[in-house]
Amino acid sequence: MRNGILSLAFAVLAGPAASATTVFETPQNHLLVVPLNATDFEVIESRGAGPRGIWCAAASYVDSRMAQARTGDLFVKSARGPSVSGVGRIGVVFTINGAELGQKPVQSYSISVDRAGERLPVQHAYQFCRDYILDTSDIVYRLNRSGW
Image (spheres, rainbow, N blue to C red):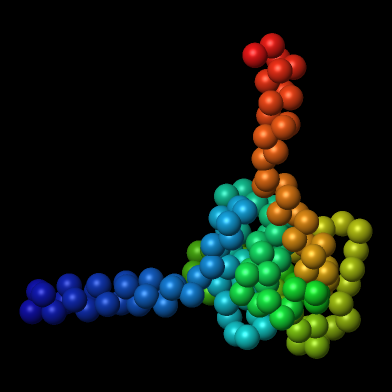
């Protein structure tokens, strides 16, 4: 009986982990991206990432997993808020299909994930991934300048 209860508890707890095999971790900032369907996915906020980091993760996912959409646009389908893919997390749902928005897409000069309908070209959003690249020449320059 006890083994049966433990097995059941393990199966319940392992269920979400087993389905998490499709989760994508972005190589630039290690944010998790959860695919929701063929055109929608959710970026899970963590590691202190702001809007630039979240847009980077979305573009990185599209670049890696949705190669046909690399030249298209990214849209915020659901603004930053409670995750649709996991309880207790904060996420932003993106789509590559602007027709699913139900409203006119918005392109602003500021980068935000707090408003549904925000739009950026995938390649523009991917440029935010450069924030996570350390250039060794910058490091050497700063070390030389500091007297190392």
